[in-house]
Image 1 (cartoon, one colour):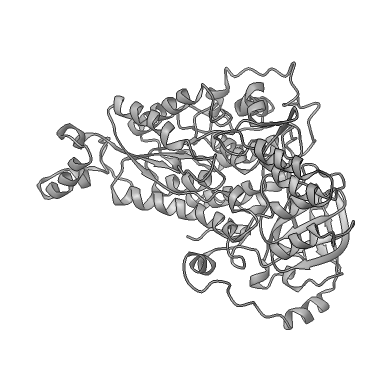
Image 2: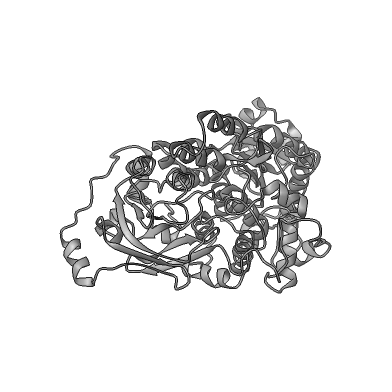
Length: 561
């Protein structure tokens, strides 16, 4: 429970004040505390920095800007590391099992560090996919004054005059295997795709979640689209620290900001941007942390009534730095607000409402093609559809960006893991009309609910994206596109219908009807279910085994607490 003491250091005083805390203060003096520091608010800077990936490699350095601002404002910042599992490097092998687990572990690390050291407030800094929701989950759980800062997007690479990014590198694998590009071109794309620091450049998961955090009110306005290596970065870091000091002085905590209305603003913004399906999973998990009643069925009404306004990769042409140059996420939010599609009275971390933050934001759609007007949207409805049917009674998630056909019906090609499916695609064993089924990759079965970017990129690279569908109880990267359905629940490991599929079963995906079904009657499904037995757990000890025992269904956000 938060303290009732109105002092700015009310929480940390339990660690720093009184004769009985002599030893506590002695240890703090060893890390730089002076007499005057013991009455200042102690602010934890939770930084997801790592040399492992471009998304996070710069975060510790830029966190120093916020630290100096907090010191100048009279606070005592204490920096600590969270950790990172980088999807782009974990993709396609066992490492991806650790990605979603890292989200909940990051939240646990922040909660434990903050509680363990009685911190008065938190500034969370994240870069790649899971560090964003994981950090904000931790901030929300502790519920002291808090602000989230996104480390920023990477700039686009250049290959023969064309913009390339990390998904270009993944798709180059399929293109090379299909004989569509040479080894020299594949290598050139590999070398050009990631030119510096920052998260993957399209409207993939990191940029989607960063935008969602701005719309949710947990990041300062205008910050989510600023590139990592931009001249604007220092101003974002300082302004975010100043916003946190305002939250401390006025008792503004995540639970005051992260209301049902704020989540609706975030969902609406994700839809308008053409965001990643992972937003469903992460927003459900975030809502649970603040006890907001948000369920998977809530997403369809927003998708049905929100056009995609932005022509963003993976299905479109542009990346986040292009959106920033065109006006940024806040311009898109202003457009939504002007149409009455955002809750203007929702509070944000700078102490102002959404309406107040957007009041002076200009909307200029001239001389740019990134953001479209409402009367000429990129697509008339949102990018995410929740499907249900006998294949997913709890729900499944379809991303409609880039869809050429809205109904696909074809024979199942069933695989019990990602690796065997990828091998079949690369070896030309998947044909036009097939429905690739990858199962036992759910939260419990994987465990860890791996992203299937390698198989979907191989399908795209092989030129089959219009002709082959893929369904899985795993997830998709924000970089996946085509007729791809993930988050199928119940998952195979718990006896969901996907576990009962056999090669040749006819599977139908209908995005308009929001339907996913296999052409089998209930009697046949029951016959197969009677003969089904859950596979033995893939891990019996360690973090992966513990996660498999604790994690909830994907339809509930795949949470562990």
